[in-house]
Image (cartoon, helix red, strand yellow):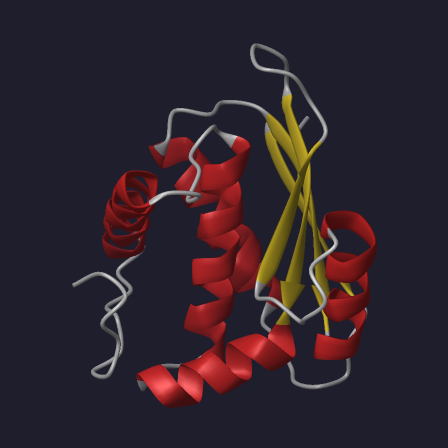
Length: 152
């Protein structure tokens, strides 16, 4: 039985995403973080769909990049669902100067970090989360785009 299971559910038609590459990146990130067993669902959406989720679950009336739903308690098998906006990824990737696939991978890494206990609600936590994102992206051999100052 697979120890790190990541299911990709593609509910958008905005752009093609390499599901296998996203699954591999998720497994590598989980392994790097010391997670030996996990069950994750990653749902790829467009902006209107993630906007609806954001409004209905978090009362934020705007589209967003990624929403994370933890489905397990600390100490249990890591379970969660990540909603990723492919449309937002395409827009941000163009702005940052790297591929949409890399931006989707960043959103996946960001969501995984939330699932393992990282947060970004205040500046100190944001710095810590950004440092871990950068570390994981480097481990995945992904270099930020030339216009990307999110880790500066």
